[in-house]
Length: 466
Image 1 (cartoon, rainbow, N blue to C red):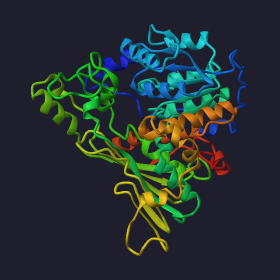
Image 2: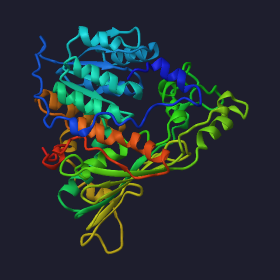
Image 3: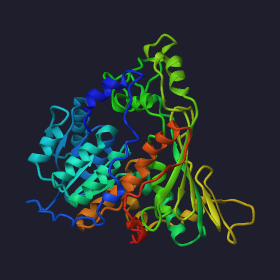
Image 4: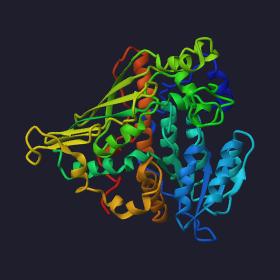
């Protein structure tokens, strides 16, 4: 990535600016067919897992809380450009009565200095989207054996290939930190699917349907917009309003697909005996963010002149090599309750997340829905049975804790991560491919095979019963 974050924000302030999203990157035929041997970790003097953070904003606070609860970890150093985020982090460590780590703060590339000077067993990256790949690549090339990157992992096709190429070349294990894969009902549905309760799988639906209008703008004091205050984005704002809003100005596609497609990818064994083959995307007109600005700032507000490219509702259809279909929805600019809209359907049953209904042929009463909770209680995944009590007070209903536990267990046992570079690339690629499809009138776009054929013989690895 040659554009700095400052340049990105500066360009994004103008309606005509854009981000490259359809670069094809490395040709799949040129890629190697094996993953390099995993690096051996040099144990720390204390014997603890040495953790580093790049990015210490709101998302990182939950990660801090979870990792600080593990007795065999130590957060060695953190890096950020934001005094607001670093001060918030100080409060988190103070409340947990933990020693504050070494701080790297300076220019936008200060994380490179931290990677050169410190030795880590794992780096957690919770930065704005445009920095995910440069920071992940830098950490892997610096010899960090495990790298956890927040979602979405990549924005462009080239970035997807960069993650795969670098992980293969260095042997560093890259994990996409997709917490919804660890949601309790999602994992119970996975267990039911693996045990054949739904029969042969046919169709899935998912998405990210979340009213983020009050997150894309705030007054620079509160994370979410407070009615009656100033509307700010970019410099002067805090949290995601500093950077996320600009993606809505410059891009038109499913720019945040992984919360939905991650669980679906696991249900359908994508990259493990199955793969995505093509997609087509369409979008509605853009109205929601403009209306939000006018409603809260008036028709003469400077932001009222912004031409937002992101359609309010983006619909993507995906085919798989085994004949399943998937519909993915992105809807963040509309007034609505939160939903990921899961639907898991096979030849013998179906689960609808919205409504919490489930039907299994021959076991449910004919033509009558069961409550999904009645089934999921019986098929609770072993990770939740083992760690559920500890996860009760953690973020996002406990799934953040289960995810971090799964990652750190992999580090402790020196084994591959549960959600790897191929998952990160395949799930994140929906963004760039949907943008390409929409830009060309909804055409069908081929999905690259990031495993270069390895998917045929790879066996499912994520969340196998313990």
